[in-house]
Amino acid sequence: MILAALTQILGAFKRQAGEQNPATVFLLRHLRESSGVRISELAEASRLDASTVSRHVKALEESSYVSRVEDPEDGRACLVQITGRGRDLYDAAMAARLGALDRALSDWPEHDRSQLSGLMDRLAKDLTHPHDVRSSL
Figure 1: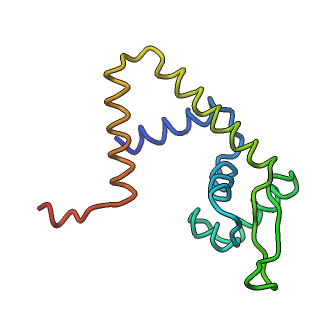
Figure 2 (figure 1 turned 180 degrees about the vertical axis):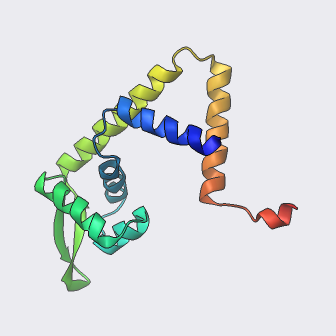
């Protein structure tokens, strides 16, 4: 029940924000938080195989959202970096998501918004750092 609701919420959220490819936003977010990463690191972070990430990166590179540079530690490899255009795209996607969220919650009382925020923070924490269920039994 909760998973179905989360899936529905995320889908509606992305549609209302006008995102064509949510993987693009995820990859740009990861790149924005780094000074450059290898395809293999992006694949690991996104839990996708390297060939899938490589195709996404190629499309992003063709649109000038990312660039490849030589890895200073290994001249045989390259790092992927976000460009200014990529930062602009990411910022616009985040602004669209925030707008969609603000519209959806505009009629909610402050108490409900606060409660939702607290519960979402708790869920994110528990999903990111799951506690040992056996220790609470």
